[in-house]
Length: 399
Image (cartoon, rainbow, N blue to C red; front, side, top):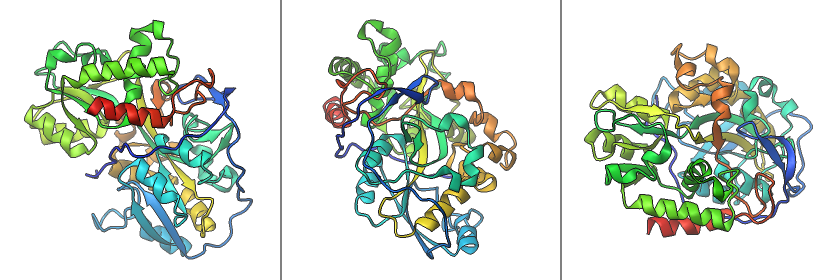
């Protein structure tokens, strides 16, 4: 299991236009929005011989070549098979990845949902011909044609791995066991100074998801499609929460240390973080999917419109989602694999059960990170707030 994770960022955002109605299927099983067409970009019709090189932007842990652990290496086998020498630049945040892709120096990126639509509508990534990626056929269906990785049924990448943003708590301190996000919002003062929250503008969606159930009068239908009024309500809730937050985290080590020391006892987390804490046995934590549901992330390999090595990139997208390799990445990174056949290849027979890898019902309760846009992602109109509004709001919340 790896010890490095993605971190959050609140850098510059790109505002783009999109008209939305109904079409397709979204991340949580509800109708997906029909989006305006992004810039027309050429899609590959075939895959030829590799060009000898591949330049990637990735989350740390996605392109292991034995440097961190000699026994963990799936890059060199790829290079041997394809003749494509891999060069990786690690992105610390989604904003980093967006900016790096705009240089035109990279062939592809492992983008999360808070970056994907920005890349698509800026014309930085091309539509993907999934028929040229044989392993796409057996990728979990609930990761395909999502609001975050496709436009009107056209995929703009190949799903890689995913996870939920869970509620974690220390049962020896937090009692009774929480079943609602109210534990970190309306009831956060109960554990004032020991509440923790994810440090990113996209965390606003967690507050919006809670308000969707706790205050139906707001009319929130999708946590990423917020009107100015709805965003203001989420911001007010998060400002109230701020008084009880002892620490915001983006680097997983901060949350591990905070729970082990007892300075945090309740807050949002990833399953792998809970596993790490419990494996050290310094303190016992539990995770729960609150009754309101959860947000989550799904990473997608996307190809640059300026790729100088498109054949190598297509070969990579197929290789990284092959059963054995996707299993290796998932276990090292600490996430659910996108490839359904990967579950038969994990070293831990119970791994996919722990991460609900092929549990469609579980996945249906997740609202995957999706870049907020002026044209509402859920198709309810063109009066929603854009990601730039969320960035500004988060700066106000954090002070």
